[in-house]
Image 1: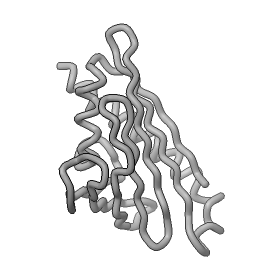
Image 2: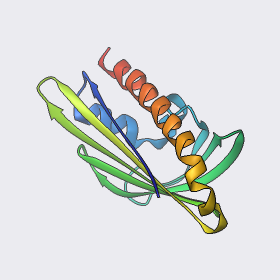
Image 3: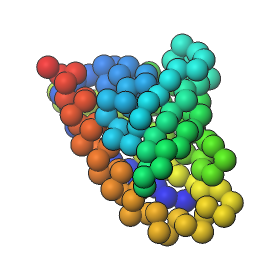
Length: 145
């Protein structure tokens, strides 16, 4: 399994940061790998389903994400899956003085023969995490403005 975890500190409330990221369609604004994210079913809480199309290592892939946990304003967990990968994205929000610390943890478990490529893909996932951290910081920073 490949795990990427990043933390950003932003000058906004946990509620505003949570509400922004809980709408997974915003990945189009901050996740550099996302091509598009479409709401398939639900109203944003547990059970809501999204279809996410991403570009990774020059290829487009589509995952169906389901909100597994929705605990406003503390934590949201989504699980994405297709035939070659299972992704679990966990976002936590912690108030600290006049800032909010947002921790984004992404776990990627490759399936079948794709697991053999995991050691070779680790660096690409790390790079994606670095870009997503910058995107998160920029997007959440606009909430404070």
